[in-house]
Every structure is written in structure tokens, then in C-alpha cells.
Image 1 (cartoon, one colour):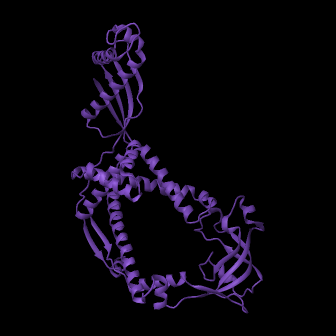
Image 2: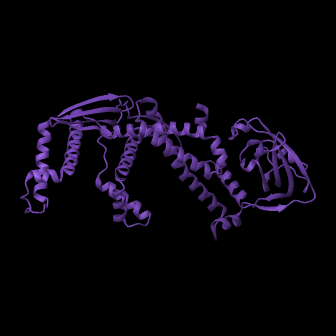
Image 3: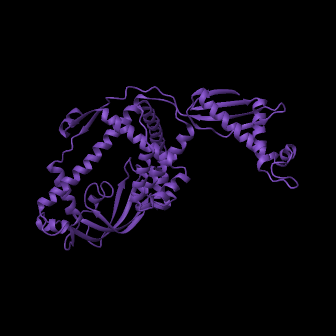
Length: 445
């Protein structure tokens, strides 16, 4: 069997295979023998039909079977001879049975990238200590006060800073309705009824609230705002939009006192302020612990991403970029971003997605390489236990759940994810981790 491999950029290689006639003939004979034993031909007893009759009747099936066997055998032989790590064997082309009885084809392989690993043990990582300051606890308590605040109506005076103004507004750009001037929907900028604005400098748009000061209930005022340079809708940056605003109501926020009564309201009978502070502290520490672990992983990824460079398979990069873009769009929609805002940021979203996609793929290959170097693996038992745990969380029958994953070809991906996690745990365990306080971190910055 003549095998030729020509490596190309971007983790590609062209594989050319020539199978001699003698090998083809051996495979043909074995397949014909199987058909002769199993085929049912009218007029002949099973296994007694002449070979020529068998070959004529099943010639297309036999040809497909020979082709399939030769393809599989040659691909496996290529892997052994060249020690290739093939991600995708491609679609064979120029598949030909020659007149001399030989067989040939070629295909484009997608290969795992080759790399030289740096020293991966003892990576320096700096993380914050899991400490919760009194100021942070008070911020959380203040947030709870804001959530459970009451609002009373203000009468007999005009709007002032720190009030909550409820307004109706429409907007214009260069004398035209904003959406008419833009030629497309403008979302919340176009106008709202019963819109709440807290009278603070950074509320809604910078400088908006200050221009409502002194407005009486029922009065209207034109509020002119120059859109900031970092505004999501690019074509509005630097433009002056006029908001035709009418004050409908004024509200004043009444914050609850921090006492045992407030603790009971939040946590239940017999709870005190001390219990509330303890619960807040424990919650903050749990969140901080997760943030610290995530920070360790992020620092590891950044470390290897900076030190190791190699070509990334183009198809993988395109697929992962789309995955990241979809995730960014989903997150933006959940945060309240409109279709118009998304459209205006489409190019920036894809740029961000492409950068993240390349980092993800590089990290995956690097960690797999480290796992191989350290003989880290995921046993069948570990995989099954993990899948059973997921099935139980979803309240599904484990056996059916695992079979469905196997049918959809997802087990390999899940095993690989477990392998990556084990490699990360190994690297963090081997890292040189320094805990720093917020004060020392500020000083070093």
C-alpha cells in the first residue's frame, strides 16, 4: 500500500493512497466468499450459486463494500505509519478502481496541532484572600434596604436630585422623530410612558436628571443630551438628542431600618441582625471562593495562551466562533439589549467571539497535551459516575440518559471535558499560588 502525506498550513494534510491490485483482489475474494455463503439466488441452493452469478447480481454492493474496507484499512495504516493525530478524515475524492485492478483515492485530513509545551508545573498565580470586609457587608445590607424600600408620593414641590421622577417622553434628532431620523427602531431612546428615573447624575443618560430639577408635576421640558462616545448605537455617538419630557409623578424612597424586625422579615422568626450579617458573610465568602477558583483557571489559561502559539484548525475555529457569538448574543438579549443595538454591535461581537474561540481551542489542545504527558485519563467508571450524577440532577433514568448521549455521539465530548478539568486540577495543584490582600494588590497595581 503506497501512502503519501503532504502537510499543509492550518493543521491540514493531503493524504494520497494507492492500493495494489493484489490487495484489492484479496479483499474482493473475501467479500465474494461471504456473499456466496449468504446470498439467496433463485434456482440455486444456498451457497451453491456460481461466483460469476453472485458477482454480477451484487456487483454494486460488492464494489461499495470493497471501497469501504480499503478506505478504512488505508486510513488506519496511515495513522500507524505517520503517528498522526487526525481530527477529521475529510471526504475522500478521486476514488478510482483502475483498469489494472488497483485502487486509489485522496482526501484532506484535519490534524491536531503540533506544539512544544513550556514548563507547565509551578506556574505563578496570585489570588486574593477569601476575606470579607465590613464595608462589603454594609454594601450588601444597603442593597437589601434598596430592594425592600417603600415609595411615597411627593406633593407640593418641584423635582429635586435624589427623587424618583416618573415621566413620559418622546425624542427627536435634528427636528425629526428619532426613529424617523435613524430609519429604524431606536428602542427605549424613542420614548416611554411611566418611565422611572432616579434623579442622579448617572441615571438614564449622563446629565439627564439634572435637567429635570425644578420641574413641577404636569409640566413639560425639553431635555437635550449629547450621546456619549461609548454608547452602544454607533451612529448616535456625539449626536444631540432632544427628549420631550413630561413629569407625571414624584416619589421619595423610604428605606427600612436595619434592626431585628428587618432580619425577621428577610429570614424568618427569631432571627436577628447578627444572624443576617452572618448569613451575608457566609454567602459572600462562598461567592468569593468561586471567584478565586475561576481566577486561578483564568490565570492558567492566560499563561499558556501567551507562551504557546500554533495553528488552529480552521473548521474548529469557525464553529467555536459561532458558538461564542451565539452565547454573547443570548447574554446581551437577557441583559435587555434590543435587536437594533445588537445589529449595531454585530461586528464587535464577532471580533470578541473570534478571540475567545481561538483561546478556547488553544487551551483545549494544550491541556490535552499536558494530560497526555502526565498520563492523566478518564476511566469508564469515572465517566459513568459523572453521567449518573447529571441524570439524577435532571431527574432522568440514568440508563436511558446515557444511551441517548451515546446515540447522539456526545460521550467523547463529555469525556474530553472531564479530562480537561482533571488537567486543570493537576496544574493548579502544581502551581505556586500566592494569596494577597486587597491592600497589597492595590499597592502593586
